[in-house]
Amino acid sequence: MAIYSEEVADYIWRNGDIIPWGDALIHVNSVGHASVAGVFEGIKAYWNDDEQQLYLFRMREHMQRFLQSIRMVRFSFPYSEDDLCSAVIDLIRANTYRCGVYVRPYIFQKGMVRELLQAVPGKETELVIDSWPFDAYQDPDSMLHVGISSWVRISDHIMPPRLKAFSNYQNGRLAAMEAHVNGYDWPILLDDAGKVSEGPGACLLLVRNNTVIAPPVTGGILESVTRDTVKVLVETELDIPFIERIVDRTELYLADEVFFVGTGWEIKPVASVDRLPVSDGKPGKITTAVQKLYRSVAEGRKERYMHWLSPVYSTRS
Ligand SMILES: Cc1ncc(COP(=O)(O)O)c(C=O)c1O
Image (cartoon, rainbow, N blue to C red; front, side):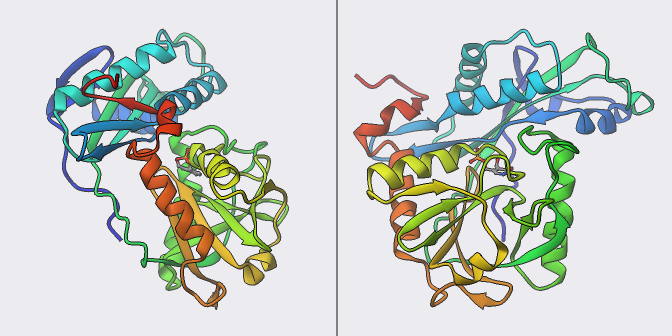
């Protein structure tokens, strides 16, 4: 399933400058180092055709998480949250997007492959912000058939999932590959205690008895902005309880609804787990309601949540 378009931007932001995308090169010998030591974010902007406006969705929260990741890897970093947000807006304007956009800030320590373990303070870093047109797939009828992976989710004492580092994603890649080979669309990983954790690029929620249940932030998950958004929407707009607690694998077999939540996936309903249909295998009532709400909030169609949006092209009065 293609989520991302193959298009590249005209411009990319690198160390304070907006430069032509094709000019942002590093030496091949830096590639391994850059990817192992890199931390990143994923932010989405939504095009509102009625207002001819592009809205960055919860950019500040993503930049706060980016700064937290940078703190955990102990990189020195000269940019503030405000600097980062302004850089993204400048970059998007330079690219003159009039469509949905995915924004990817990332930072890595400079160095050669032979220096892979030279994790010492004070080494030079590169900060890059890339972006690309994002094909928002929002076919409410498309659902995922998922399987529980035999790969175990990384944990805080091994490779902290709370840290959004490129190297953490090998764990999710192994699980996604296994799911593919076994005929599933996507995997769910269990944590090292055998409890439900998340998917490779999205958190997992389930519904039982009209309550939305989320595996806890200590359960091997990334502290997800979308998960927080869904919590607010479920409690405020749907008036349904949202609780955080440890989830057993077999609860997924009995759940009324199961869905992934994440910036890229948005709200993605699960049709079956380990080939057992979730309820009747159709998108559930709560999942569908959250999907609709999420879209309208992200596109700037709900006044109450405008504080979550950063307009790119002009300021609302
Ligand atoms: C491993 C992982 N979990 C969860 C998420 C969802 O996080 P968010 O809602 O902040 O995009 C992502 C996406 O970034 C992810 O990569």
